[in-house]
Image (cartoon, rainbow, N blue to C red; front, side):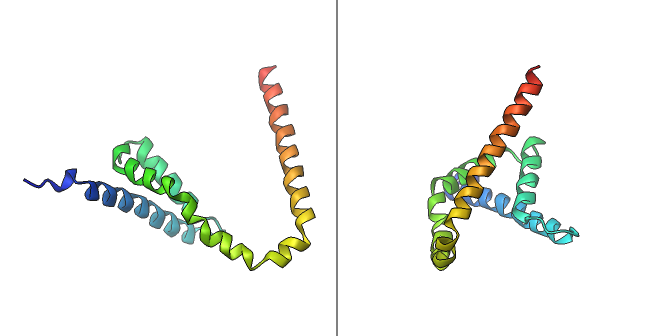
Length: 121
């Protein structure tokens, strides 16, 4: 006899529903905050809380999460296409963008290195 709790479609749908519910809860909490904060990040914290407290078993979201991760590159195509409309702005300030990225990288490496030295002393 057909057991819907064991079907592959049910496993994926259940995982997507849990992930989507965490995103919706995160967006709802973000709309209540007096400052701007991404609802998706709050949703990740909600999912982390649910998984770490074992209110939601990892097996419920594992397969759906793996499917999303496997096809994540496809999700960046709209962002890359949107950046193409700003090529003139990016071209004019490419030096500033690269220098900001490099100086940020160097600053992060220095701070992390210093903190590591202090913790090892």
